[in-house]
Image (cartoon, rainbow, N blue to C red; front, side, top):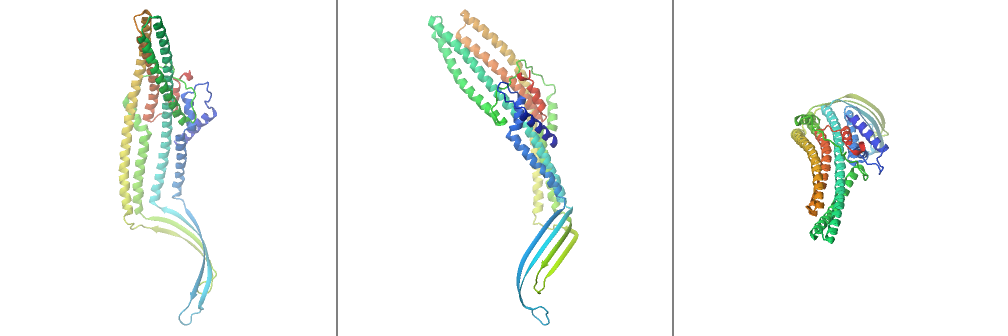
Length: 450
């Protein structure tokens, strides 16, 4: 899985750098934004570097059963005042100064170290854990990018609708003032239109601010301010879910990376118990050394050159370490129980997230269909109210209310469409099966893909 992750990431990053969607005249699609995110998102960059660092654990694991070779060198100067006692000693008394030199090489090959064997498995588990975390970061990037993309779109649409509603209210205000001046309407109509206009101006300011914030949230992911974004196709037809909730839950139990990451932590905890228990066991090493020692003097008055070579097997048996090893075993057992609790917590959270995403997707499908009908009804109501106003049986207030209802229906329909597409991605992400192909499918529902 590690190689495929690097290949996928490198492919998309290369695509994003080679074909930047930077032309202001051409709307940026969801895939354009995602490719920019692959190349510039700091969260993904951090995860990639962290994963690369984790790959070094493989070499560290191999090193635990490879030979260790050490070179040592020593130089010393000594001065001794020697006074021998007794008769017939052939060495003279007095002060002697001399130097000594020693160089040596020692090689040690582990033959049996159960603790090291378990630690090797732990390091491999850590690499698997790091790979899953990178994959989860990629999945989260897809969700974050889509969320920010559609947040920006809905903020832009709200601003556009408010401006269109502002223009309609302004037209109604001008008409009310004209009718009042000619005596065909009361001042109430003019005041009502003026109040609506003042309110929509305030709403426009808030909508403009929300739009700027949404764009900057997207900028934080892709590293640049987005241009005009491709909107959802007007002929979007929501597709009903074919698989029941139970099937989605089964897939989530097997595929969700958050669960798998916690399972790796549980495996690591079990290995930690075994590693600490192995500290009670003996270790066996093959040891070979070669040493050269030279001295130009000694306490006896003469120097020496000594070359020594040794080879053998070394056995170490720990007898008592003050109870620390037993304490670490107990600690590891408790940490394993905590890890198992975290697995259950991740499983329940995944189940909840999947259920929530599934129900929200079903709801958004129904909402799109309902808001499409509401938009048709609101348009018919406005047309009828406008006709009644022109005939003198409806007031300008009725027209303003009908206009506001129409713009609200348009806003709600657009939001429902965005929420529908986003809920598809949320469900795939909650289950743990989201991929770039899912983003590409959603991308086909945008105007740019036509």
